[in-house]
Amino acid sequence: MTRKSWTPGRVNLIGEWIDFNGGHVLPAALPLGVTVVLSARDDGVDHVCSVQFSGYQSALLDAPKSGGWADYVFGALQAARQEGWIEGGWSARLSSDIPPGAGVSSSAAVTVGVLRAAAGEAVDATRIAVLARKVENDFIGMPCGIMDQMAVAHAGPGEALGLNTRNLEFERLALPGRWQFIIIHSGVERQLAEGRYKQRRDSCLLAANKLGVEYLCDARAIDGLPDDILPLVRHVVSEECRTVSSMSALRKQDIETFGSLMSASHASLRDDFGVSTLEVDTLVADALRLGAKGARMTGAGFGGCIVALLEQDASPDWWPQLSKRHPRARFVARIAASP
Image (cartoon, rainbow, N blue to C red):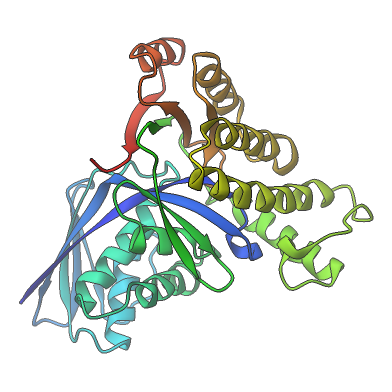
């Protein structure tokens, strides 16, 4: 028995670090993705191999995580068995063109992809996304929000997903025909394993508790917070406003407003939330200088990718000039309206 799925990566256009704070986000699907092929086994073992990684890994059906790249697959297979979607051991073969560690949801695409292949078409995509998040939270130990899983489970080509992370209501927003988003890897590999993600997440939850609100996006009077927390809260509250405004700008096809909101988001992530790097800041500044309508880091930060908004008729020299100034940077993907 063989089951197969393809799941895209995602780029977050705006709405960073607020998915676990009860806010809105605006991700879009990438043309890059993960193909998962599952085959049933009869030896009571899960087996994983990947085109991107040498060798393979095996684990008993109830084994805890080992700290390897295959944990996302093993965790998803265990969750699928608990849901009754599969029984016994399975072999999983993965093939992906999503760059790992870039902040474009390669891990979420793997987890959702395995669950999607195991569950089949009859299972609701939101249910799969919620279960994928549980795998990352409980099995992997990454206290992530729900944005990545919902984005890769629901977003389609040429559209953004306006998602309310509090109640999981969403709106599919078509990208205007004259817009294009270019995703560029800074050349700085993103690393969250050092605990910096958890530190900032814990600070946000502490701030919400101090303010007496369930979700930090609901905070209003924030001036009395300690200096080590105030900038983080200021980013979350202002980013929620920017994201809601960007959804309105997208509906109106207002590229100037959308671009300015992207750039303001980056400044907030750099100055208040402290998750950018010098290389990423310089890349964003040069992207704007060369003609982008807006640009920002995307993902949790500490390296990884930027996303830039350009008009369809932007100069074809934009990327060659940017890459000349930043030889470590590399083109990842382009997303635009569906033809």
